[in-house]
Image 1 (cartoon, rainbow, N blue to C red):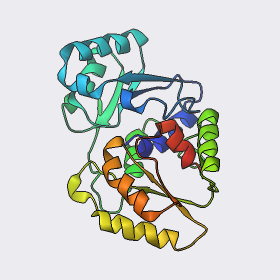
Image 2 (cartoon, rainbow, N blue to C red):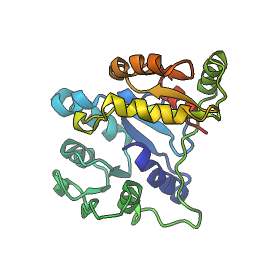
Image 3 (cartoon, one colour):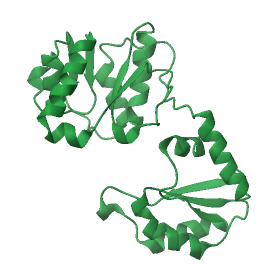
Image 4 (cartoon, one colour):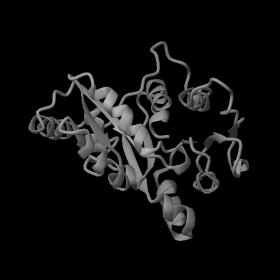
Length: 241
């Protein structure tokens, strides 16, 4: 969801180059967007606490109100966020027309399910009336941190792998019903490794290690199991090419 909003964020930056742009993110995403050129400030919240703890919502309301923002855009519809930006006194409140959208003064019809429309295009639609379409194209920018790049290059060098000959495989999913059977991942990786110039790196959260550890062992030396072993910044550096 965060990555799919970056082109819309880029349009806001180009339309309001002198404005102070603050992004609200879940604390699990720390490190992903540090020093992003379209963002001036990141406020981290605990999504779990925010949804269940009134004091956490009240604390966030006080923070937002004190900052005196002129406009708020809620890209992921949330009833509590809609209420908070209203009670914070923010003049322009934009979001999707659902989940207490009566707190908004511009509720955009939620037609994100239109066949063939990419999620990025839906998010651009959310900001199009507030951010005039610039002549330059909207871009997805996700710069990699130099320290993270150095860390990844060091690990690849130690494994004797060229960074332009990597196929990265992610085995995880938030919906278990969508997960491939392990034999499918095995077959896919073996197809990649059949071209001897390529190596495979398995990535994911720690919970994927139960699948990826044995898989990497079965595949051999040109398959590395990095599940649960990279930060978001390091993962971005790995994928930068």
